[in-house]
Structure formats: structure tokens, C-alpha cells
Image 1: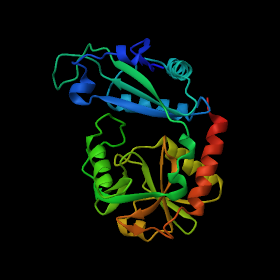
Image 2: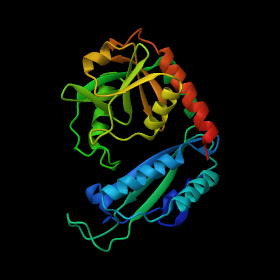
Image 3: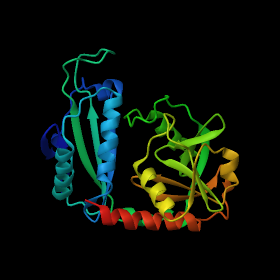
Image 4: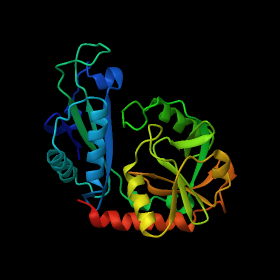
Length: 284
């Protein structure tokens, strides 16, 4: 089955999809994106992703070519056309095509593309049972990590550093404190307290992060939003990450040192269970 994608108002086979070589997403990484999970053929936390998308566009003074209702209809149609039960939808909006100039063009039409990725068993990732291994690396990204832009070269480099070290991911460190993973928010657990970095320009304002922290507080867990050090992470009882595609995923090792008992902990397991249950109920 040929995958059907969406490009600037048209649904068409991926082999026929085209974007201008003058698109500023290609020339300047002048674009933003979102990734929404699909479980049971329904969208997980779509409203949260749509809201963050608009925030990213606003921060870059970029026009949104579609309304939220139109965007939801496009997502649903792609799920239907590609017969996705479990998987992801990737959405990207750029400032559009214009003659190459560092200054924003005044008359460019935004480019919008979406495509699906079928991932059967997305919610049954075996890493949820075994846990992830991470390494620590220096955070060398730009300062506006709260804007979900398509400039992802350093996170890609970090992912490759992790693979070269025999790990699954890297946690980036700035001034001795963990900011986040290459494509996820980072947490530690000490006793009954969950610690994760507070919101700011230093980290992405994770949609899954917001939901998980809400569910944690509703479950009477203590949450501290503050920076934590690498030393704190290695001395923690548990650690985990959250993202749209990994949901809640345990971290059992950092820089070759076991975290806690070196296996997924009860707090992480409970949060993953709560998150999946609640988000399936609310899926659209």
C-alpha cells in the first residue's frame, strides 16, 4: 500500500509529494513541527499538540495556514486513508518558499506537510519492561528550545553519541544540570517525589509532560519542578522520560551506572499505566 501524505491542501501518494527547493524549512530550518501518537485509530492529546503548534508559530511570527478544526480533519483523514491503528502523524509548517534571504519574506505562503508512520505495538514497547540506558552529554543547542523547530541536528548527534556508547539516548547537561533528552523530557524519582526541570526557554514544553505531571498530582504524588544534577540522577531511586511516542519510559542506567535497582521502578510503571489508560479514554 502506497502511503498517502498531505501537502499544501492535497492528499497524494508519497512518491508524488514535492516541496520547493527554495522552501525556508530546507534553507534555514525556518519551520516548526508536531508529532501526534495514534492508538486504536484515534489521536492522543491532539488539542495539546495543536495549542503548542500555534505557540511555536507565534514565537516565530509565522502564519498558520489552517484552523484547528481543519487540522483535526486532516489528521483524521490521513489515519483513515493509511489505515493506521497504532502509529504517529508528523506535521511540519514552514514559512514557505522565497528567494534566499536571512530576513523573513513578506509575501511567502506557508508550507504545510503531514505524513503517517505505522507502528504496530507502539504502546507495548519492550523498553517499558527493560528500561532505557542513557549517557550525559553537553547541551550545545540554541537558547530557544521551547519553540518546537525543525532544527534538530544536535539532538541527532546526541542520539548517535548514545548509540556509539551502547546506550539508547542521551540526556543533555547545562551548568551541571540535566535539561532534557534528545527528543524527550527527563525525570528522576527520589522516594515519592518526582523531579523534573521547570518550564522555560531551556526545554521543550512537553505535551506528554503536562499530562503526566497532572496525573501524578491527581494520584497524590509529590512533584518538584526544578533543575536536577547528573549526580542526583545517578543517586535517584528511579528515572524516566516522557514523549509523544514513548509515553512514559523508564531509564535504568546513566553513564554505565545503574539508577536505583537498575530496573524499572513502581512509580514509573504506575505513571505509564495511568497515562495510557487516561489518554486512550480521551483520544479523538
